[in-house]
Amino acid sequence: MSKLVNPLALLKDYFQANKKIHYKKEARLLVLGKTSISVEMKTAWTKKASSSQYSVGSLWFCYSQKQQSVAEYLQLSASEGFERVSLLDRLEVIDYFDGKLDDVKSIDKAIISSTLVKIGQVNKFTENCAETEKPQGSIADKRQKKAEWKSEEEKKISSNPDHKYAEYSEAKRREIQVMEYLAKRERRVLPKNHGIEFPEISFAKIHRLCSELTHEEPKGDALLKKVKKEGVKKILDVNIPTLRKKKRVSFLDEILNSSGSSERKPIIVVPPISDHSKLCYSNAIDFFTKGIFIDGNDARKASGQNQYSGHQEFEYMVGTKLAKFDLYDSILGFNKSHWRRVVAYFAQAEEWELKDFPPKESPDDIFQKSLFRSIT
Image (tube, rainbow, N blue to C red; front, side, top):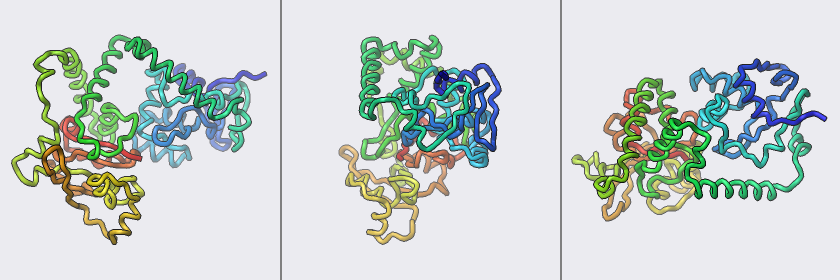
């Protein structure tokens, strides 16, 4: 009887040992020693954006092209016929196969058994392969097991907060704690003003993505060094009474209290049409002012809005102050004064999400001031 193995573990072993993985283009097979796997074979790695599964081929190609720029990777994956790994997942995929991560939340342990491949054989993909290899038990049973596993992990962490850091070195553990500290204390606008947050996105991921897309890696590296240096100091000083009592002025308050009248209006950027985001130019004002979500196409038809002016204003009570907001569906023509007032930027959470960042702006300034949120 042939031995079964998790294709993710098999790929990781080959990458870690620098073993050659052959790709048979015509047959669409990856050859790992005596084992062949169809590139369409599904794995237990689920997408953050949709929870659907990545294929063996898409993960292999993503890691194989890790030295390429984002634009080159996207072009190559399209030309070679491989499903593109979302930029929200790409960095995690690379770190996992590099051996920097032993486990990731995106790997659904409840479905690993249904993705196993046979060692020493040709594993071809068929539409009903999921049914033939599916283990006994209903979907409800799998969900129950997954919930129980998560509950056990939460109990371990609550009883021993350092449990989740146990597998990391002291230096890596400290770095993770710094990033978690920064993420928890990130400056936010009131809930209605920042809308729906995309899960699993962090300061580090957005910063790294922005630096790569704008070809500003040196500035990005400089900022990371600054975060590592000052972040540790902030953690050490966090319990000092004077800091604990000091009232922090929010970024929104800074804008509303600016000297010039035009400088007092915070900016929110949304896509022009609902094809790019659930929140768009047609329905954003109803959402922000009334808390009502209307489909973008329906909102546009109801208002008779055939053309997009690119700019609208709306008012909203922030605390006891009536604030005026600028709503834009395009950032063409934005200058430094515009970027200083951006408090929210809505996009589809795809590879082009941050592509129009002003390349001459310092990522340091952008990330200390602006709030960027994605919705699917």
